[in-house]
Length: 429
Image (cartoon, rainbow, N blue to C red):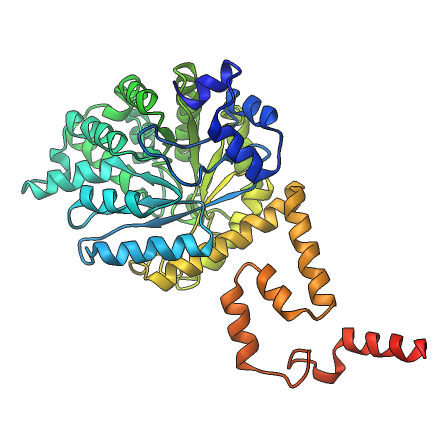
């Protein structure tokens, strides 16, 4: 029985208790939101993660880090280092997006090493295997796609992205669209290529009931991928994107009816003034299902700095109601990220998530900032380091410009706190 079904029957599980304690919320409130599909606890029954991640209504905004091999860089060891960096930087989940090397071995090693929630994208494996057989991605079969879903669930993955909303109807609309960047979702591109070649409906949509049966058996959370997400500001909020979102809303209802936990994925590249409206539309159409966004990236002109462009968009999206931020690294659009890129991406996304949690009124978020401010006022440097979101960087910056006193080298003897404290001490005498 899935966490969703148990919640609907009034059963409180160990995982619900764990998340409620971590979040500082009522376990009964959490159970109710879970029963309504407004939050999820991705936890494959075959894999007992050390830390269960709660995503959705009333909970802190969570951060996912994408890792995984490529054809050019198929090193498993490097990806395990990235996993460690993501965990140390505070990621709540990782997704294995591997396309190089032995994909199943990479996935299994990541799951064995990970203490946090793990996700994957099964269609990548189906496409890679078709290509490795000496044929093209078009050679994938419906059976290949479904078998990949089954295999990932059986391997213990907690949540999987399935691009079920990329239907043949969406494809027809896409062909009429004046999009600048077309389809930028890799899974979406695979399916567009397949449907165009075969003139048939997306098998993941046609066989959605079979996918639900597998997900229910293993209690795998479905992350409904936005295959038509905009990859350029000029493409944001167009008919293609909204058409697919309506299909994802339909699939949400079907998933809940079968007792399957579900997340809805969102854009993408979005100008700032559209972000809140896009989040509100998703929440309305999908009846409060958790919303998982990539960024959003708020400008197309900053390659090398897209951890910043996405953090800006992520903070706005999460403050408007998004629940799960997929990090973006400095190498987005340029190269496979390094270990350091992963770390920077996670920290940037965590800053965005925390800023949004303050806007959402999460008590622990407000308390964290107040604690930091108190230590700053008292010039408690060790306390500040222990409290801040990135202790190592804060320490290294202070050490690089040392001060001879208990102040920073920016203001020195003119530190406002020291001036006020010395004045108070003088008045006391």
